[in-house]
Length: 222
Ligand SMILES: C[S@@+](CC[C@H](N)C(=O)[O-])C[C@H]1O[C@@H](n2cnc3c(N)ncnc32)[C@H](O)[C@@H]1O
Image 1: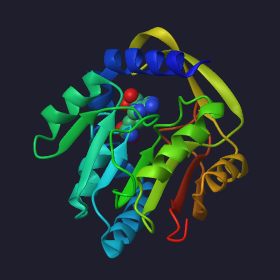
Image 2: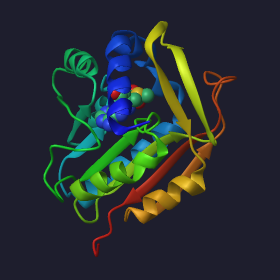
Image 3: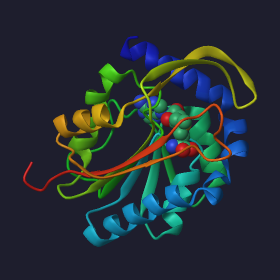
């Protein structure tokens, strides 16, 4: 799949499901203490480093952006889907959300105090991940952390239905092997500092597998 096809398909699908996605996942973090623990650790690292605002890249309806904000993080959201951005702005009027792509961010070099990539590379064809990670590396300030959530495995699952919708286009979901993903991050200059791999919880079984969370950072000497 080309980059243009991936961006077009992802944008079209999330524009179609944005309202229902927000309704279905609004409170999802409440029942995920380990996910919240990784977000809390990330927030603490960001606050301690004090290097600038955090971008929630692929923020969707802004539910995790708002959670980080509640932890005292200066955070804004970026998403490919105009409908997701519209939903996020309506739902969280006090926060900033902008349309944009992780493949070419409208952000200056070395300016972010942190980046959150929370299940937003799950549709990125693996061959395009180095481009996304290079872009994250470019915009992060030296020393700034990045937290990535992903689906663990080694498969591509084409989705025809999701969030109560027949999707207008088939959307691929990629499950990635942790060592493969860690190698891609390392090659992009983002060494992995911590890994959490957890089993699927009751709400994720039986269709979902293990969930992965990597804490990385941009080294000060890179
Ligand atoms: C599974 S949703 C996760 C949304 C949000 N992080 C959350 O956890 O609720 C994936 C999101 O990533 C966004 N996305 C995918 N590829 C993107 C890209 N290249 N740039 C910006 N957003 C992207 C989609 O539009 C969608 O909103």
